[in-house]
Length: 204
Ligand code: MN
Image (cartoon, rainbow, N blue to C red; front, top):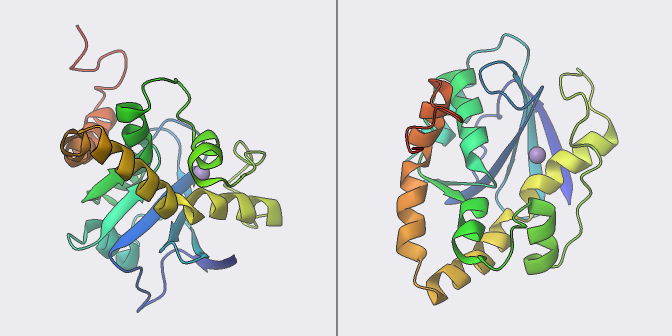
């Protein structure tokens, strides 16, 4: 595994192929209150690219271009949050997207465990530490432990997608999953507009 660290944006000319795994680290769990601190990306090739976002930063042209690129699938775990965060930070609508948490919820109905750590253990056979999950991501200098943690959240998503896609296909829910993924950027936008729980428009 190799970790590359950048400030403010991806470097020019960096390509991730047709599927890029993305995760974000933030100051907290409210995309309307808490700022974006780090965006992690991987092509699934053992390299993790970490972009630190400065406080008050509103543009990241290379990153924005990738997020909006219709030819590149953006792969998340619980993308609803990351997509909202990225839209709030840069005003960009991330699409097309795929979400390993939604995929798991649609087929692994025998369990209520859909966390990334658990899924990676069960389906990919790798153990990732969640020890740094709640650390201070706004710090200008990230610790080695933070870098390793941030990287581990994107390094194995491609493998996880392959496993989940096979189960979705087997259970006849791949098309349903696809339609959920297509809706996800809109779901994230609704969250930003205030229609998150308990005002979710799909609730009674
Ligand atoms: Mn993460």
